Length: 297
Image 1 (cartoon, rainbow, N blue to C red):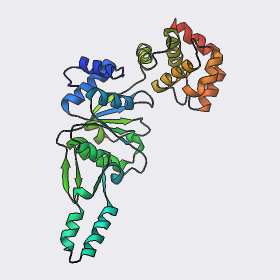
Image 2: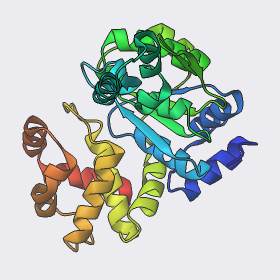
Image 3: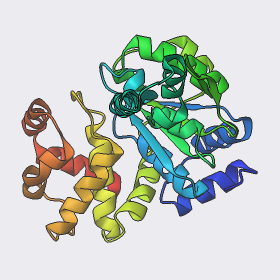
Image 4: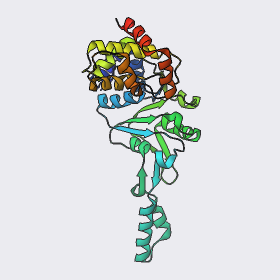
């Protein structure tokens, strides 16, 4: 995909199975045009990770994913030295006798002994990949600081080798579920976009793409019911991912319309916390469904 307009980005994402609104499509278009990382923030399940996957498909580029977690460090995210291979080389040199120790030490820290992790893989890829740095809010703050060089200059510094810079910058997508605040220095290096829950119209359009086997009536009722749930005081409102999963589950059960019994049987697909399931039961599923059906009609 050669990004020449917001409209083209929107069309190409749609062809890859992602329904993006104009604001998100504009953010993607600008990130591609300006060679800037795109920072996506929003609740879990609203489609941030899926956007990166669909963007890779639209660009016909490989997706390199770095899943962040507490304790993530440079050796897991960027590179580490293949110590086992280095030790083998040392033993072979010692067995041969007469090894120049200074030269051997120098030879051991070359690209041949380097294990490339996702970030370095992305910087050295033969053609620009999509680098997904997923759920950065799960990583520790020191790792954020390390990313500043990557996000601003598309390069990393390796003491033994020097600076390794991307010939062509990868397309970088950073996501956060906002379980903690990401430092401003990271956001300044990126184009920022908040991914919100979709409107009912766009969520219905998403279901048409992701659950095409669902009858229009069922899809409308599902969307209306989920939209109604998001207005309740739940610990975790269902995201778009849950809407899709629930619709597919209802299809497996041959449902053509929502009813209180079917909803109660499948709530574990839609809601992930028992307190939320209990809260909905107290609200009376039938009453919530009636409200939703009146909206869907």
